[in-house]
Every structure is written in C-alpha cells, then in structure tokens.
Amino acid sequence: MADEGRTAEAGAGIHEDHYCEHPNCKRWGCYGFEQDRQSVKWFCREHQPDIYRGLLKHGTP
Image (cartoon, rainbow, N blue to C red; front, side, top):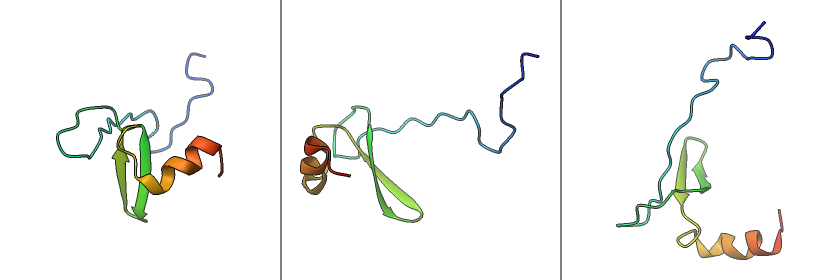
C-alpha cells in the first residue's frame, strides 16, 4: 500500500530548477512571471520586475 495516494499523471513528481534570469545572478528564481502561455521568466526576490514588487509586498492578488 506504499503507492496509495500517488498520482500516475505525466510529469508528476518532477522538480525543475529555476534560477534568476537577471544577468550574472545565480540565485534561486522563486518568482515566476508568465510572458505568454508557453514561457515563464524566473527571478529571485531582488531582481523580480518592479511592476510586481508592490503587488507581492501588499498582498494584492
């Protein structure tokens, strides 16, 4: 019964490393911003786009 509760969906359990896309930054990209339906840009806290800083800081969805 060790497999109980696990999903068999394609891609389940896959972890992808996302690093900050700012030039010369090697930090973890914890903030992902969708550019279009097929691409996401990843940034660390320091380099996230300014347009999103206020939203995350104030908790606005």
